[in-house]
Amino acid sequence: MSPRLRRRDPPFPPDEQLPVPPRPAGRVLDARLHLLDRQLVDVDEVPVATVDDVELAPPFEGSPDLVATNLLSGPVLATRIFGGRPPRDRWHRVRWAHVTDVGTVLRLGVHGEGLDVLWVERWLRDHVIGRIPGGRHDPE
Image 1: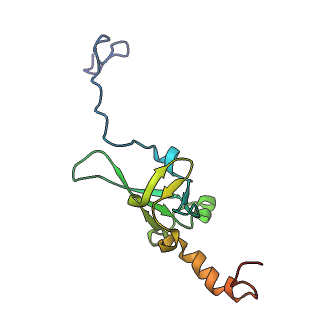
Image 2: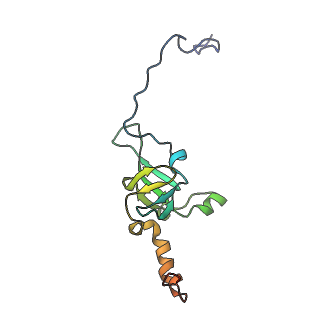
């Protein structure tokens, strides 16, 4: 008979207790469940962007655990419809250090105006909407 185990033989004794894995420090998040497709809001509760992807990195060299470093937002609608991936230079990054609360929405501890995520909206406001008569002020 081959050195492989037969199906009816268990790979370990049935009464053996498996060791409990150590619990990592901090809050453990499931990226798909807690982060992706969540709305980012700034300090003033103004919507900033939607999380489309997460950048992960090991906390130090050789560590098996991963830590979120950036939340990514960008033009992913076409790639979700037609497939593929957007170029890396098209992603807008929001540092994970700016996130203050993870819940139904992700709250940031900074004002959204200072983030690069909103540059398209600022450009449209200044160059398109601002040129429409009455577009430079709030309605009365």
